[in-house]
Length: 240
Image (cartoon, rainbow, N blue to C red; front, side, top):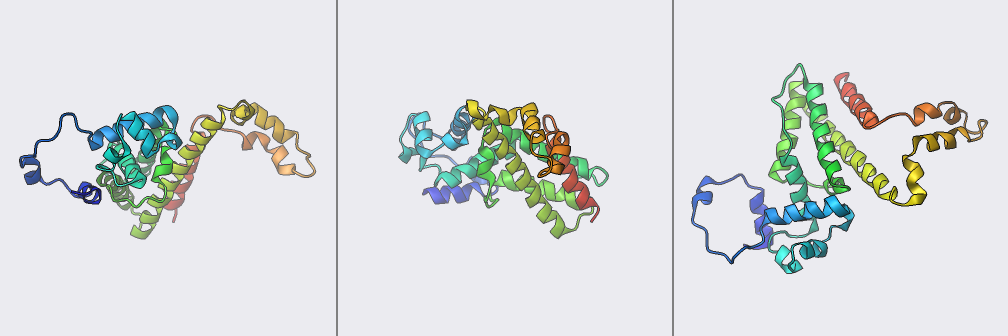
C-alpha cells in the first residue's frame, strides 16, 4: 500500500472484518503512525510548531525521512493527523436545545485548550479540508448542537467555520506572543501597564478616543477577550 492509499484508508470507517484478518509479520519495533504523531506533538510542545519539519521529526524518531513517508504523505498529511489527534480528545455533549449556546461555547473552549498545549499548532488547522474522521466527528457534533438550537443549516455551517477560524487565530496569536516574549525587547507586549502608559502618552488631540479609553482598550485577564468574542458571535447568531 503506497502512502496515498494509507492516507485514504485512514479516512474510512473501521472495518471489523479487516481488523480480525491475520496481519503479515513485520520487522521488530516498526515505526507506527501513532508513534509519529506522539513524537511530533512532543517536538511541538517543547520547541513550537515552527520547529516541526519532516527532517526534525525523523531525527526525533531516530530514523530517516524515507521511513516517515511510508506512513505520511507529506507535511500537510502530518498536520491533518495532528489535528485529528487533538480532536479525538474532545468530549462532545448530547445536543440540548435549551443549552445549545453553552454547549457550542464549551466545545470551542476545549479546542482552544488543546491548541494551547502545543504552541502554534493551530496553524495546522488553517486552510485544512476536514477529511480526518476525528475532525469530522467534531464538525458533526458542532453542527448537531447548532441545529438543535434552531439555527438554520446554512447559518450553522458558516458559523462552525467562523468559530473554528477564530479559535485557531486566537491560539496562533497567543503562541506568537509567547515566542516574542522570549526576546527582551518584546516583553512589554505582555505588560498591560506598559501598554496603558504608551496609549495614555499619545497626543490627545490626535488620538482622543485612544487616550480616553486606554483602560478599556487594554483591559482583560486570561481568556476574558476569548469569552467575550465567543459570546458575541453566538449571541449574534441567536438573534438572527
